[in-house]
Amino acid sequence: MPRRRFFIPTDRIGNGIAILTPDQAHHLRDVLRLGTGEEVELFDGEGLSYSGRVECHGTEIHIGSLKRLKPAEKRKTSLVLAAAIIKADRFEWMLQKGTELGVDQFLPLETRFSCVRIPAAKLEARLERWQRIIREACKQSRRLTIPRVHLPLPFSDLVASQEYAACARFMLHEKAPQRLKVVIPSDPVLLCVGPEGGCDATEVRAAEQAGFRVISMGSRIMRAETAALAAVAVFQFLLEQPPTVQDAKTLRTS
Image 1 (tube, one colour):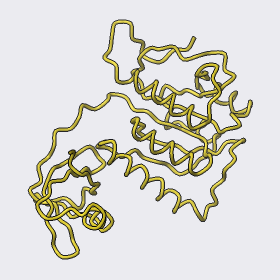
Image 2 (cartoon, rainbow, N blue to C red):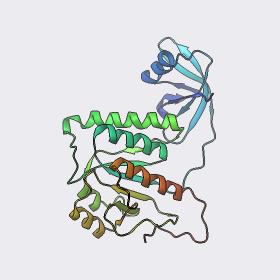
Image 3 (cartoon, rainbow, N blue to C red):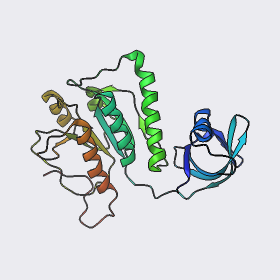
């Protein structure tokens, strides 16, 4: 049986000992009912993981005898998913599964046809919930790095932003005449996915003018979260392939 896995911030690791946060200590002791001497794994969300043994110190749970585990080989390129905010359960499911599939950053988008708007007073709590869902997905999928989830931003801000100008930027649009052609990218990839109602024509034109390649995933009609994850799976497959002599520096469309 695989060792139980816990998230631990780097500032709680030192001198061969890690001190679990109260919520992680509660989960270990009261939910999983692990006791002194049990072997567990830790990850710091920044690429490092450890094995160690449980030590109970009153209400605190320490993990002692820490040994750093060999990290998995890192992918050379990153994947950013910019997705329109949809109904809470579906958006959270997309965060969870996107984390399992290897998304590095999530950019929640406010688009013209977005059916959900998060009030400013609820943003902090919503962001904390999203981050918690992502951390739990990292634990389950044995990821070492925790994806970053940003505050929601208007679609126009994404298009105008220079932060992702170096990415190979793609926008999924069901009416796009071009389809994705399978070649391996060498640049970071940004995928933009609209809401259930699709993207407004002016948003599509703005994306094209900013250098996005507008592509279709084919003739199938999919929910927004399904389309996002289907595209992520395709791009992740490409990103993890060994290079060949036919590889291009960026993805093409046909």
